[in-house]
Amino acid sequence: MAPESEDVSSAVAAGAAPDRSESGNSRMTPEERISALTDGLHKILEKAVESPSQWQVLLDASATLWRYSGGNVALLKMQMAQRGTDDPTLVAGYKEWARHGRTVLRGEHALWVIAPRTARLQQVTLPDGTRQRIPAGERVPHGAVDDGKKTVIKGWRGQAVFDVSQTQGTPLLVPRGDAESVVDVAELCGSLATVAGSHGFSVDVTDAQYGLTSGFTDFTHRQVQVGAWLSPEERAAVLAHELGHVLLHGPDDGVGRLYGSSADHRGLAEVEAESVAYTVLKAHGIDRGPQSATYLAGWADAVVDAEKDAMAHDAGSRLPASRADIAKSVLGRVTAASKGILEITHPPGFGGKITSADADPRLSPAASYAGVGQLLRSVDGPVMAGP
Image 1 (cartoon, helix red, strand yellow):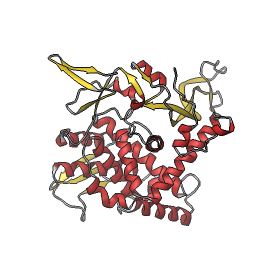
Image 2 (tube, one colour):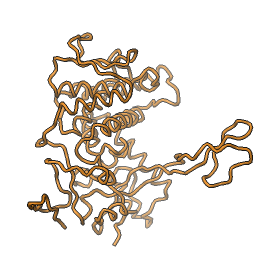
Image 3 (tube, one colour):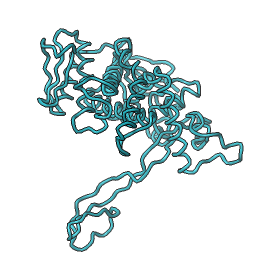
Image 4 (cartoon, one colour):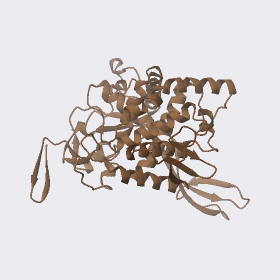
């Protein structure tokens, strides 16, 4: 029997909409659902500004679900929390779970995320030089040049998904970073330097100190400086922080200018960079909570300051202005930057998406088995057992 994936109670769990089941209509239209999810997301982010500790909670979830957008991480976290269940760890749609040999337990209600509605379009250049997009497969106008196909976002929709804890079937080996895992910090530093190089920045580990900082990003010379006096773990943390600046605070980033800059180390620019560092290291099994506390504690004040700056300087309709929109923007930017780094540094785990399990078959000593009551071992290696 298929789960009740359309039950409105899942949207209510996200704080996104009132329960309409009592009125006899337990289904939402696509437009109503996306509106409910969007409203729920804004409420979550407003709460995160009112209660700064919630920002770190969202970053913790992002370290596990780093392949998801920041908004969807927030929605998944809130829905699971309000149901009184464990945090989400591995999430997929009903059919995707079936393809991996697992079925959703009877009676389970879906979690909801926001997904794009896409269309495949063909781009053409007309004889007069103007460009046009037509549905893929449609006949190209006479004399036009075919510029190839492109997938574009046409809108948004609510998508029903389920956490691994809501499923049963073939056990899954899920490597995770935790307190018992052994992190090769030197290897992590090397991977972070590779990320810097992929963006055209060199990494200079030096005894020279820029002001009182342990690290500095020089956009003019495209160089990241990291203090040679730091311990290996501190060096990784500082390098990840500076990579947050590299990815988010370049001179051409309009939103970054609203939030501050890496040059004057102020405002949300510093919170963003440290949030990236915190998320990246957390995904690799290194908890930087105590060291990041000062940065992260200033999150709410920085959001409010950015809101005041936007109002005072009339930043423009393209830039977020309300504190909820600014919080949404920051979460989206942080999670996008973290994903760009983690896709290269390859932390343990699958980033929350079951489809990536196929692309990463590595076994880890710090592995756990999803949906497994007992793990049996043989001379040939681990034998996975479970419901």
